[in-house]
Image (cartoon, rainbow, N blue to C red; front, side):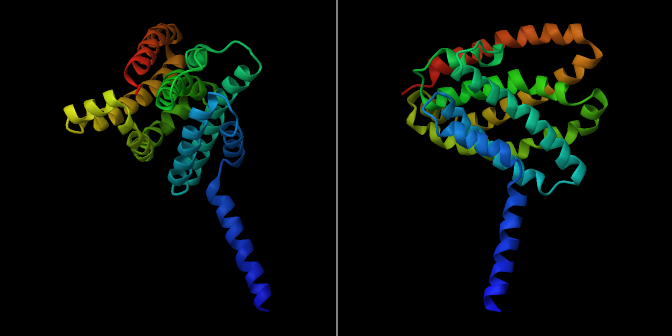
Length: 232
């Protein structure tokens, strides 16, 4: 009898854990990429943690919002996974990931920042407009932006690793720690702009194209700053 209840308890626990994990296929793929000996490892580990934060945020949301988030996450993650596959197959990259895969000698934090730049500024608006209609984006715009609260925890965990980089450490000391708040705000502004661009794609596609061209130049400047600033 004890064995019977132990089996029931274990089964219920296992099911609960599987339900809480969510996005299992994405997480498994990122774990596989993180186990490779490629530059993709640096962003794959970071992204895996971000997906886990997504799970924690989504599990407490209404079913419709949870389904929206997971639908977006599926489309969003495929853009990085595709970039990794192109790298492995020696294929050309979309603009967003060209800089990331153009240099195999950068440090972990440089790859993480450049990866965030590529994925948020380059991939996010495209994943949103490819996955959802204008009306759906307008309906779920607020919970999508509100997700920033979960990303703040994620950003802080990344930030704790920057102490070993001299310029970043000096910047932190010079600003009395305000650089962390500035970093959070920067990511939030990036995400808000991406949502606006995805919606603009449907209403004013020519204006969206102009903004995308301008954003590409900004992305290159961010990447160059990462290379110049984030080093030992």
